[in-house]
Length: 433
Image (cartoon, rainbow, N blue to C red; front, side):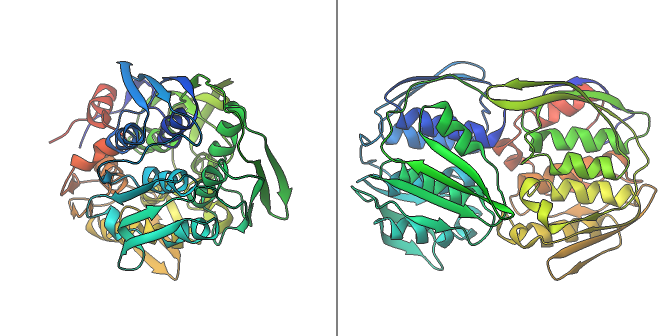
């Protein structure tokens, strides 16, 4: 991908995390849930198909506009076939929580990438609630056959790592429990599930506890149908934002980006690096904070990114590494152990991509250190994406401003989160070779 200065306005696709949850809450609510701005990527659509298999009527009305008629809490039907989640780690893990709290049995599977991702951290609390794992792949991986508990036990669960997926799976199972289900986090993770629980009428309390939070959910609420407006995905917005920062002369506006504090770690980091980003028209849409971002090409400086920031930007480290390659000085990204269990081993994949671009770097324990020289890196390399959409998009963005274009081995998986990535970037001025 190459191009001159980027110009124009752009609205990223709907947030993937909220899009998954919109389908799930539509399934668990008796009545009609209307959704606007849904991300129509493969990951999210797989979750929609799984909701259909469990008894929901799912209908696409127009681009981004969907209607879900759910059977309601406690009324799911056993799926006839395996629930195939493709590459959707979030969809599969959250749906395990749904199934784990209902008396149905379902088999979960996916593509080669999903089959490599550990699920034990999800299954362990579900077992405590009464669910049974009837079959599983080596090391607690898919394919997994899960028998949900008819009357799940409410539990108090301390998450072993800061993970919205673990927390959400426990809370979704706890919806059908008699009593209060509690999740305690040592570090706060994304709070979309808690916000959506409240949006649909559940009684949920969130209180600070040390450096983290305690979430208490009263089980068996009468969920009320409600409209969901999906804000623009900050993880997808990250790619045109960084592209505009590193391509000389660029000046773009990225519209309607979610600025939830638990998702804005990349924005905070880029501003610390000296990024020319103006935050405009702050507002609330669909219960989430959003804003328009004006982004102009900038001289960036290396920074130290604390480990405590990782939960708020865990999906954005690959594109941050690209920004760091253009910055002047050292950027150290601390505490990236969770990157090793994403769609690929993202820590290793990012390091290999940086090596292909001629960027000095090192992995020191769970830290990634990038040595920027304040100028475009050599580029010209071939990057193995390992079926990871964020690796593919990150190094295509690097190719916009490196001295030689970057090549990636596969772009098909980009559709999992950002189906219109190529035309969107082309409208801003990028070209693909």
